[in-house]
Image (cartoon, rainbow, N blue to C red):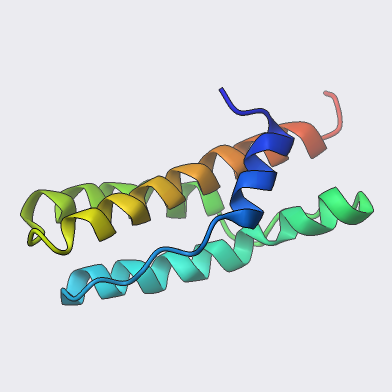
Length: 109
């Protein structure tokens, strides 16, 4: 399992996935870009110690997006299938990173 800093380092150095050719995959790519922007709040935490979660439920957005991409992967063309798998893997990394961010930054109960 990746720890928080491993997930953060991987995310910061990983290229953003391509969009593919199918309309639904292009929409998933757009939604992935939106949620990626919300996850950037993690950068402030790592670089300056500021814990300020995004104003939306990032984890719910990621779960819904991963489910959608899973369905798209089943019907994707041979050229879009690797793109869908890449988008799903990127979303899964964001999910792991953001969960760990919430756990690491939250004050003890």
